[in-house]
Length: 344
Image 1 (cartoon, helix red, strand yellow):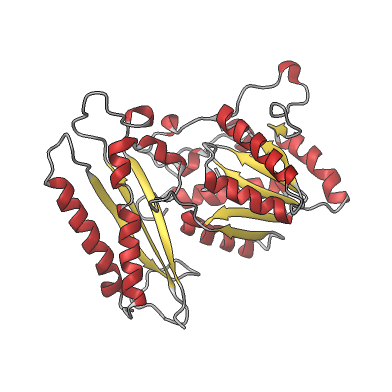
Image 2 (cartoon, rainbow, N blue to C red; image 1 turned 180 degrees about the horizontal axis):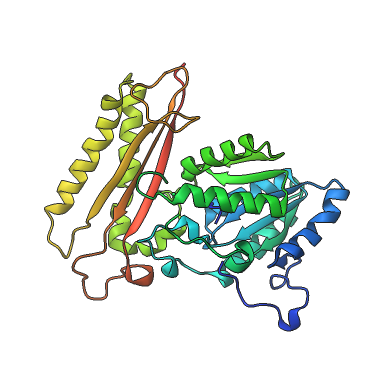
């Protein structure tokens, strides 16, 4: 969940006793039963509980959502679960970065920061780190079960695991990042359609200084591909500028993005194999902000959502000593979006 609704959990506590993150009061809960036991008294005491769903490999985007949750709620639960249903058949679940120790250290450090800030209502109270057997007691249905046309199992996987997490944690509020915009639309619809008593809070996309959206998958990029990885954001910015300049037709808005992507691809193709970066454009979309249906024309009173995905292909010819990224630099799929605000 870019926080995605989607750990391989860390080691269990010795002797099976009460497990906490090192040098902290943060509980580690690994079963549905233990989470519900923890949750029950807060319901009776009318203490609000927030959920920040993640797939681990925490970065500043996740931490910003946790900060927002702590400002508005008495207790924050961070779930860490790599949901298999959010990986397509050809995506390597086994290579997804597993960083339990680093994640635990980041949460402990952040909790201390929250404790020192008197403006927060609460702190991080628990980490929910279940196994897949715990989340899918009837057995995992398999990866061939929906982000849309290119990943048909992704959204069904998101909806399923989020509904499970919502039922387990019973939060008053859930926090997601804007980077996964299609996911946020799915979750809002899920909450509305099933009439869940949950407020969905969407935080802004956290970005590096050069604009690249922060993602757990960025560790795969390595130096060479990281330098080109902003191409998608720059393309979406070009489309946004076209809209701000008065373009409303789909062809005119998306044409600006497609032009930049085409020029960047040509520029890289012209380089020698030991220098270039290859990438494929998965999709560029202009969609309705409520339904994510593709728009032929943007209604300036409503605005729209620009989004896209590119696949950064593995380096063809590595240079001596070159950092190719985590797991040797496999193909990396990057997503991003920009909200087109209604015109005044």
